[in-house]
Length: 411
Image (cartoon, rainbow, N blue to C red):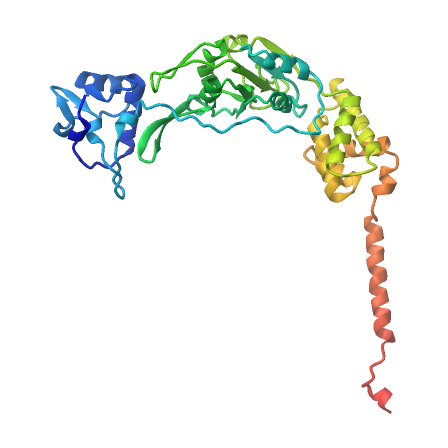
């Protein structure tokens, strides 16, 4: 090793090529700062990064055919940056922020809540796959279980672009130093937390980087050479709208067919349904209470009945859309702002096509017979008639007005 006091203060400008080789060298030779010519060629061959001709200068040579990244370490000056490569294999940055979900006072337990609570509280590594239609409380159930148990929960929202760097972590520049910043997976492992992978069926094959982690085994960080051992209590929970087999009906475009070996690593699959009518009414009543809206129990009952009829029609294949619990909650929030039932419902179902929207609104007026009379404002014709009446009244007022300065009044 080199004596740091002997490091030469040789200024270099850090470019993308410098970073590419440093990151690549950290992957192939974790924690190593001195490289022989053959090792440098091997890094280039293994990773495809450009040959670091900037490194193979006599200023950085520490022996016959051996070059040191440490010899390039300098301080930051304007656009000239220190390249302290001893940090390539430095300890990972660990975020000490506590990530226990906030407890929702009005949350109503239903479905597999108790089962999931039993699994998480056991402390056993037990990967769970939760599937169900959109807006039925899958993610909130996981978060509220963790909130009740005061367990940390790292939630990762997956897209097709999610890759190993997003999940595991990557090398990055911090204050001029190249360090490895851990992703949510390693943070959850170290802290014995719950790793919640949301919408996992949107992922590409890059999600396979979690293969060994789903076995509950230690993970070898290729970028640092460190083995990360999962702490007691660490487990993985995934949510999805499908079972990882894609969406045949096209309702969940973008979902992918997941690798069978990957899916097999989940111990159990929980099928989440929409809550029963009684539970859903309780959810809406509590929501109205949270919004400080009184005398809304009948409205809650009508909303639940309305949604139930629509869902039954959906399951029978009569219609292609349905009303989720999430959308019912959205209607209560809209009602808080507009104090108008039909307007609130109309705004919240306008995402559907015109025919479906009209059908849903018409169906609600049949469930709530008073809604049409109670909520219906003046028609277009009535509004025009009222404007015409106002206009005639203004004209009459002008004709009745006598100008005191007119000649007729003077004489």
